[in-house]
Amino acid sequence: MSPVLRLFAILSLSLLPAISSPAAQASESGCPVLEAMDTESRRSLMHYICFYSAAPGDPAHDANSPDDLPEDLDWSPARGHDLVFSHTSSVYWVHLNVKNSGNREALWYLKLNYPLLDEVTFWQSGNGPNTHLATGDQRPFDARGIDYRYFLLPVTLAEGETRSITLRVQSSGALNVPLTFETPEEVIAHSNHLTLTHGLFYGALLVFAIFNLLLFFSSGTAYYFYNAFYMAAMGLFMFAMGGFANQYFWPDSTGFANTSIPLSLVLCALSMTLFGRSFLEVEQKTVAGTAIKALAWFCIVFLALTLVLPYNKTILLNTVLALTVICSLFVIAVIRWRHGYQPAMWYVLAWLVMLVGGLIYALAAFGYLTDFLAREALMQVAVGGQVVLLNYAMVQRWRLLNEKLLEVEHSARTELEFKVHERTSQLRTTMRELEKANRQLATLSLNDSLTGLHNRRHMDNILPELCAEARRTGQPLTLALVDADHFKAVNDTWGHGFGDTFLQLIADILTRHVKRPRDVAVRFGGEEFALLLPGTDIAGALRVCEAILHDIETTSLTSPDGRKAKITLSAGVASLAHGEDRTRLFDRADEALYQAKTDGRNRVVVSDYSPVDRV
Image 1 (cartoon, rainbow, N blue to C red):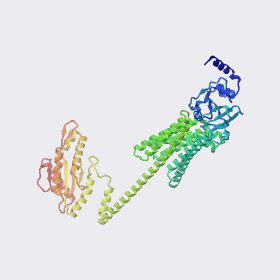
Image 2: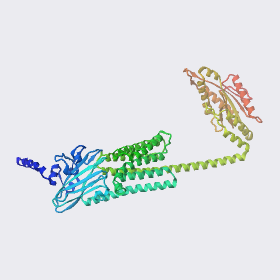
Image 3: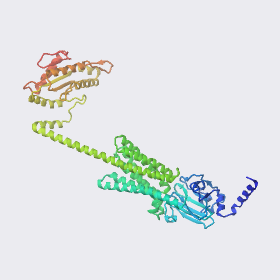
């Protein structure tokens, strides 16, 4: 810079305090001048914005107009970044210089695209009359001058005119100051686009809520009501966050304008909790049930606190509560899904979408992310996706319940037909057989708990029937009694626990060889077993017993002291003779078993025949 220019600049700066014109104030702030006719410049508005943060105690904090600001105020350029600040007690001053280089007078709007600000004051100064607009949530809605959910400041510039615009912004919550400088046509086009988007979003929520309410009235199913409650609460919360509630519901209730936001948020959390418990079928006495019950009580407590605590406290507490509810329900749904509850899969997807969208939206609302409009659109997409997924989950749940109902109905019909056929068949035989069947059904236990084989009670019940059937049909009935040899020595040597292991081995071998559907293996004593073989003659029974004895002889167990332990069996076989009753049949089989023991064990003896050594 030449010495002459440097001297001119110094003289100009020295005269600035004495100049009270708007252009002088704009130069003092150091903010560049925005050319209003230039579309690209308007799109790059934040490169022309300067701001100042006035903390409590700073003279600028108590200033009520730009004239009250200190002359040496250190303005900071925005450098193209949105003005986004988390919870703060500071007052923010925003400055913009704008010029019309066109050849005609024109109108623009400075638009502040965030509706939830307690105090917003605009000042304009220039060649024409100075204007002043004080608005914000702490004032009635009509204080904005223009019936619009965002804050609009009309800026009319004559040909070649430069105006200085100053904003004073203060809020008890987060501070978002997303500014745009638009022509009336651009404002209308953008408003029409948002009107279509919001109309589709809130219209869909309303339709889904009414539909679920009608389903509740028609079916009485609780989760339909809770889902309608949730969608209504979520719609009210988004309506309030978007500034519509303040515009249409309570434009003159400045106190309730802020309270409605945390209030609708805690109602969302409560409805989420109630719907999750009902839809996921969470039992009350489980850990998940206890957690959901605790969350519901927290929601009720926070609902009461919302009415007495200030906004900046309740919005933070209720946001943390809502995110906690979302995370908790997400975890519980994952657990229910892993436990096989299929509708929980869609519920998990719904809350995953909501968790991501809600977290991003909360960060933007609290001033930790920029571009609140984009986050609001993302939240609407998240809520819309969640509502669709939740309703699809309910459809899937209804489908599964319907399939189970049809399955139960079919099973019941089949079972009923079978029982009718069975009862008819029993009535066609004899009343005596029916009474025996009823006594068998009334028997508490028919199996041995150690080996899993049928016990003595079952043998006493079924043997008379088999004998009667054999006499009636002429088919053979063979009874084999099997006893473990020297079993007492096993218990004495290695203990009863190892003896039980041997008994289980014997039972497994008997089960493996007694394979026909009507054959019955029974443990009727300590180491005594019986085989009921209907339709099998002496030769067949002999082959079965020989195979069993061979199998047990060639099988060994490792004893507790590490040695190989083996055991053998003895068997007595008798076939039902003409005119013989079950008692005599059992006695003959027992006598044959005694003969096998007497003849040296590890062998099969057939009743009424000479002893036969095992091959």
